[in-house]
Length: 256
Image: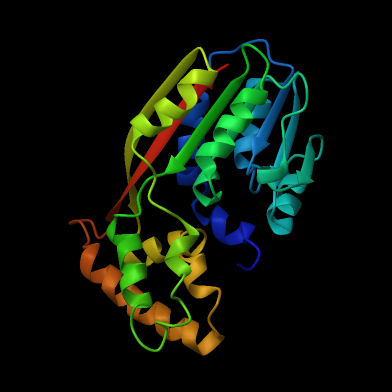
């Protein structure tokens, strides 16, 4: 895929940051010296960590140059590095690894989560949040439109950029042997957006990217026109004209 766009992602900064706030609220550690924010994006989640532990050394990791540029501008006193977490391990003494909305994109993420958890010192925390919404209309309609001509062949593998998340029990069975405490829960958010077009703008920054990035500009426009029309049929306005965008997320907090 093309590089991520920090500008597009931050169109819904408050809504995207809320799950990070909710995840951080369940991390109980007070005396923290070293924190890593995996998939730090434009630094909105890193900023939460810096406020929570102002004396800690905080490092943000991402694969996107544009996201890292934005994060460095936002938090110039903290360290940000470009790295692929599939080949990264937490430095010695890491107290908290925070991963907000990143592991759904990571191949074999169950094995990666277990590897990272096993690398933490005793008492270290791995805090994870992942969207669990591929069955929602916003994402099902992406696959439906991608199956139409003339995009069927070009986008044959687009849906494979993300897989359905396993059931909570699968995460428990995988991670419980390497930790002393594991909390797993789901939260369903109903984000109030201006209209159905805002739903499209939301997913342009994340889930829609594997479907539109491979297309040329005219094909992309035609794809989006059909997708927008189908979204408008499903996400009907409330009496005040706004729409509710239901968004299900999976949370885990593991203590080594």
